[in-house]
Amino acid sequence: MQPDWEFWIDSQISPIIAKWLIERRGYSAKSSYSLGILGIADIEIYKLAKKQGNVIILSKDTDFTNIIQTLGSPPKLINVVLGNCRNDRLWQVLDVHLTEIIRLFTEQEIDIIELK
Image (cartoon, rainbow, N blue to C red; front, side, top):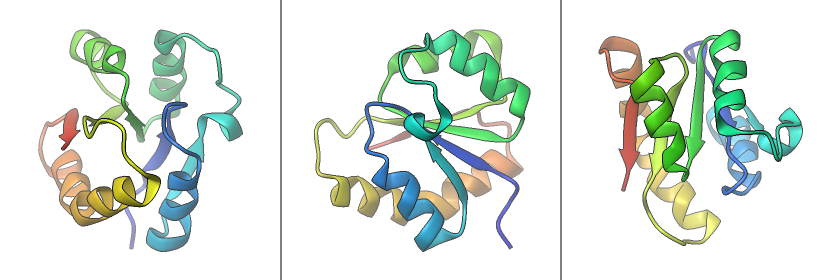
């Protein structure tokens, strides 16, 4: 059974990652396009995610790191620091670490994980 998490995929990351999270892992996932949050300030996205509850933001934007370190969680953050890479490479790295990331978010007081 999957934990009650919803992934929000930031605009710098392809919406295909949301699709793969749904199809390959059974998670609830939405891209910034399907959420209707394109062009909205990061702090506003944070506020929406906080209101929603168990949201994990997947982003390359360091602003989310600063916001969550200052204001706390939820939401949780997977900060992608892979640089420019193909979608299949990002998925490959995420998929390998996803179970452990969810475990750390769920069982420990970890708010931000860097995906390298």
